[in-house]
Image (cartoon, rainbow, N blue to C red):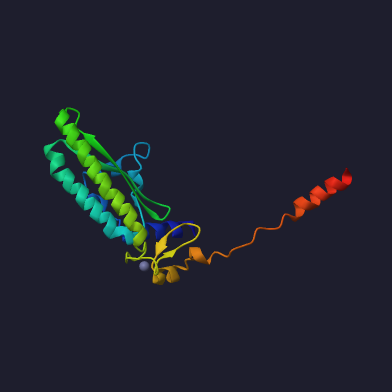
Length: 191
Ligand SMILES: [Zn+2]
């Protein structure tokens, strides 16, 4: 049974859109083969598949920086962690200037680090408006926010996955403080 589950997981990983994804961005994802005590990139891209286009767009842009101004000005922007948190994307970057970089190169690296940070932040906001299963745009009115483990879905995917929407959480009234009042009554009568 355990072996079966493991096999299923391996099959899932092979069929995942993220399988082999990092290999297309060798500079950005060069930490992918480092051990877990050096980087979180060893866990791969821990994101739902519906974000594929959003994440790919970020990676295309940052790798373009690496392949152009990064090469001429001797710095690299590398991903240190890409994951989902509270239903949205978290894409952590770090810029690495070469050891013998000049002041001007250091300044250029810092500037492009900020530019890439802006690209990432926009993408992180965008994932709130994309179904995490199918990648379709969602907006107020057709957006389903799951309760518990927060996620954003289109109505069709939410139904297929049996997602319980946030607004369907039953409003349970606060239990009356019966025990407390009994206790205090007991205490009062004991006095
Ligand atoms: Zn969907």
